[in-house]
Length: 95
Image (tube, rainbow, N blue to C red; front, side, top):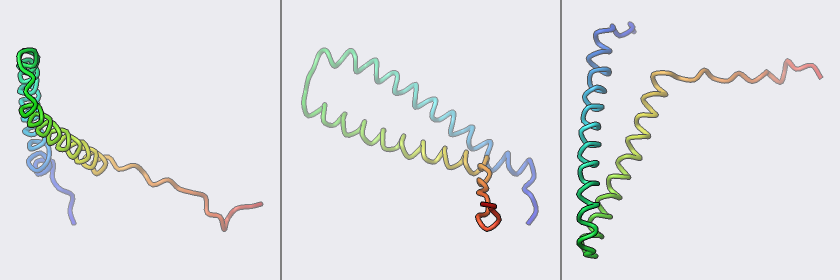
């Protein structure tokens, strides 16, 4: 099988990763905005039902972030595989 061309790698991996990075930066900005709103509204209201809904949503976000971390680690490992460690062959050892 032939090596993929530079242009194909750009279209297949680099550009989509850039799109994902930009989407995540927008999500980060949205979360910063929500954090500021939370600071203001948390002092005004301590509604338990709303708090449990918020907690459930934050749990979902944290689960998604954990999966994203795993996927990014997988991509990085696939792009930059670590060389297999070579153990000395025990049959060639001199004791």
